[in-house]
Amino acid sequence: MNTETIKELIDLKQEGEYWDFKKEWYSKEQKLNLLHDIISMANNLTENDGLIIIGVDESDDYKVQDVKKDSNRRNTQNIVDFLKDKKFAGDIRPIVKVESIVLQTATLDIIVIKNSNFTPFYLKENYIGNNKGKILLANYIYTRIQDSNTPINQSADLDKVEKLWKKRFGIDKTALEKLKLYITQYDNWTNGPHGEMEKFHKIFPEFTITYDFLDISNPRQEFYMFSQMDSTPQWMTIQLKYFSTLLLEFSGVSLDGGRYFTPCPQWDDIDEENFNEISFKYMEKDSIIYKLNEFFYYIDWSRDAQYSRDRFFSVVLLFENNQERIEFKKFVSLEWQNKDTYIGKIRKKTIQCKNEYNPSVFEEQYNNGLILNRMLEVFRDRTYNKFKN
Image 1 (cartoon, rainbow, N blue to C red):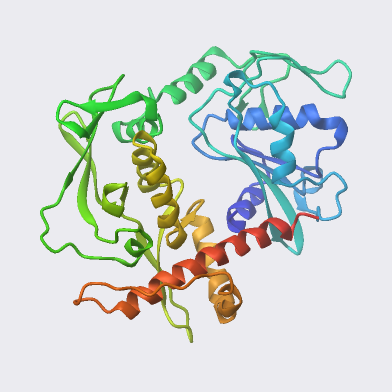
Image 2: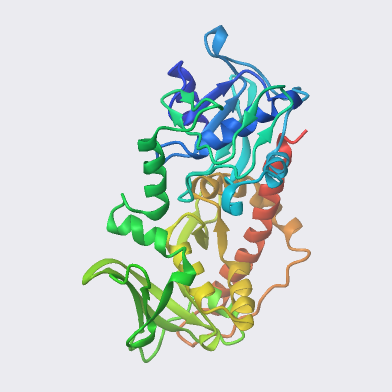
């Protein structure tokens, strides 16, 4: 969570369409309030994550106060467990996590309700809280208008409900925004008239995805290809079209003798003063590249593809988002001096490559990928546990 973003929201000294302030954590008697707030934020009418910022006292000029000793404090798993047994329509629940920041020496917790295309979220059974007489009603749609949630005894106005349904079906989106939504609907795609290397959407056939081999007699190699049983790549081009208009084009690679196909991961590096540059390949879960990676994996799933994909991501880093990648790079710049402590369970790779390549460069990149993935696990554990207790 970006500390500066939260500070800017607090400095506004008002709540808004997608953020809310709480002085302290919800008590056991306030479970209904917690659920109502989460649903309302999940159905906010912006394209932003909903933010419930805990540790800000509105009644005292929006001063911050530390929540570390709050007896009602919860972590991500607590909130996920709380939502798990609630009867949501379609069994589709908001994706929620708890993040923490330090501001003016005070620890604040933020319940982040991820922006989603599965709106509207609503209950299919009444939820009765600990407060007598309070009920969240089945089939009522709660949203957030300016700085207020829909009251628990009312459903949102029709125009707001309509907007939430339009968001689910992508009706009010641009062609590119629709495509990004549709590629997550794996069952709605089928092969085109030219075979399996052309896909079109069954409901909206104006959207097509094609991929074809590049005619390369001596295809170049990259380090992650040596994670596969067959390290010889086949380079491809991927085109995403709306009617005849090319929306996006990517380079792709068929790995492990054709068992696994993916868009190419991106390069990044860690280059600090007095620190040898470390290059690595990565994807981010909220990127179109990773959405395509999942698309090709799920529509042509096989056990062999699963094994190949696991090996691929053993040396390619997979981040939740851009912010996690930035924070992780800071962590590595401080932690790399201790890299030997991460090597114990890692099986280093000796690489045999084409004569025009230097195998030691590939080996360094490959082994660094293994180490960085282990570091990423530790980074997440430390981030999660930092404010757990």
